Image (cartoon, rainbow, N blue to C red; front, side, top):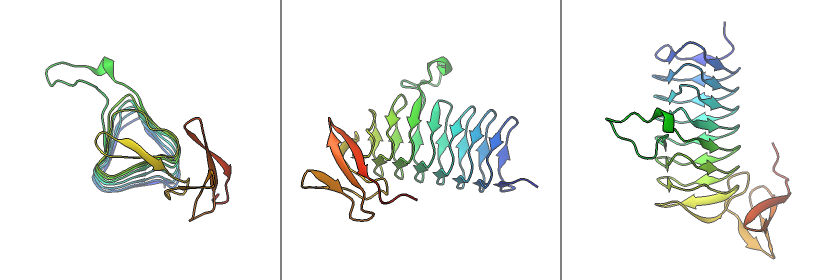
Length: 195
C-alpha cells in the first residue's frame, strides 16, 4: 500500500517520485523523471512533466499543465486552468526543445485562475498573480500583480491579504504581520501569522 493516492483514471509513468500524503485526482498524467513533494493536491486533468520538480504542500487546481522547465517550490497554489509555457517563439514545424526556458515559482506564491506565465520568468516568494493576468516579466516577492501584461499594483502578506501602508509600515489586518519596503522590496519585520 502506497502512502499517497492516485485515482485509477490517472497515469503515472516510470521513474516518478511522489511524496507521502499527496493526492492525484481524475484524468491526470505524470510523466517520467518528475518529482512531486509531500502533501500536494493535483486536481482533475493535470499534466506534469517530464522532468518537473514540485515542492511540498502545493495545490494544483483542475486543467493545469506543468511542462519541462517549470519548477514549483513549496506551498505554491496554481489556480484552475492557469497556463505555463516553456518556449518563447513556438512553431509547430520547428522543434525548439533545446530552447526551453526555466520558470521558477518560489515558495508560497499564488497564481490565479486562467493566468498565463510566459517562460523565463520568476514568480517571487508569496507573490500573488491575479486571475487572468499575463506574466511577461519576473514578479517580486510579496508583490500583487494583475492585468495584461501583469503589473505590480501593491503588496500582499504571507497570508495572502492585500497590505496597506500605515505610518511607514505595512500591517496585515488579517494576521498582524508587519512589513517594511526597502529599495523596492518588501521585508517582513514581525511575523505573527506563522503556521
